[in-house]
Each structure stands twice: as C-alpha cells, then as structure tokens.
Image (tube, helix red, strand yellow):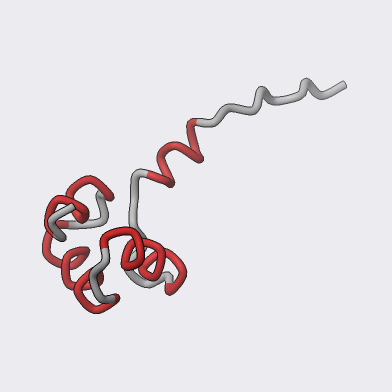
Length: 61
C-alpha cells in the first residue's frame, strides 16, 4: 500500500514570490497592484529578474 504524501504550502509560497513576465494574468495583476502599465512591469521583470519584491521595488511600490 502506498503512503499518502503530506501536502505543504511550500510550492504555493514559492510561486507567489515570483512574477512570470510571460503570463498575461500575472503581468496584469502586478500592473493593477502597482498602478503601472503592463509594459513597465515586463521591463522591470527583465531588468531585475522575477522576484516579486524586486519587481515591486523597481516599480516604486
């Protein structure tokens, strides 16, 4: 009999700490959250990487 794996929130937490610059809904969410354009969010992701903290810092939030 196989044992059930314990479900953790670790994967979700790691995912929320990143901004996927190629995902329209994530760029839109970050754009709405910071009040900046979608292209500004994409540029910030390209410049500083996909860390949500760094992107928000770059966008001035």
